[in-house]
Length: 45
Image (cartoon, rainbow, N blue to C red):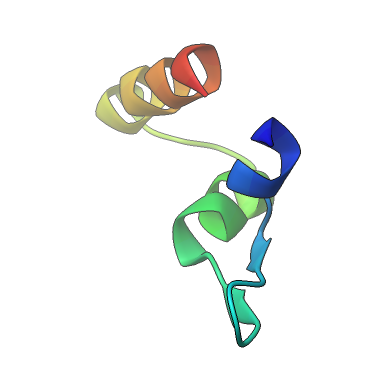
């Protein structure tokens, strides 16, 4: 489901870390271009 698609830990066979989602969660501040991309990710995911 949706929660599995957005999970930081992927569990298809072996466990792996989804670094893109981890970076989004771990970021405290972003520059203008990155903010636009972050906002797009938040609204589309």
